[in-house]
Image (cartoon, rainbow over all chains, first blue to last red; front, side, top):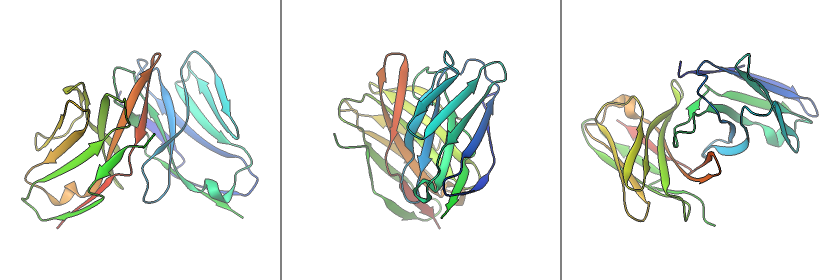
Length: 112
Length: 114
């Protein structure tokens, strides 16, 4: 029940295209869903986050869609750029302190 | 503000040894969490400290321990190292804003056990 399942494991997108990464969770106590971006040799960096009281959140080219009834959420990267090539992790927390449960990660490659 | 800093950045140890890793949180952050990242298991939560007290604990053996000091700096210790402990160890600090604990990660310590 503590798992967060992420797909796909890897993704190749052409420059200018839309990248879509999906996550699903089981624990209905989760109430905070961040996405992190990680470049090789670096720690994860917070990209965008959502709470279940909204169905969508947009920040620049990045959008989270949240479906509470299906217990799913996804990250959309519009106008994908080669600089977006990185590993993306979804995560979930019941916000009882700093314990994040991470998905397995998606390696995104944006081709020029 | 300076970000989360971790020392050392790289470490090589042999089986059976012990190791101590250090984390300095962002100024003003009182919570520090530790994660282990491996290619096979991904990012796994180890433990969290808040105001010098362990607030959350993951499913790791007792060989993994930590502590937090009064200035919020934290250390984690791994005793009797095993080959499988080779990983990137990440520290994150957080400052609760409203109902959310946003976590900011350091660059990690790459531990190699030979």
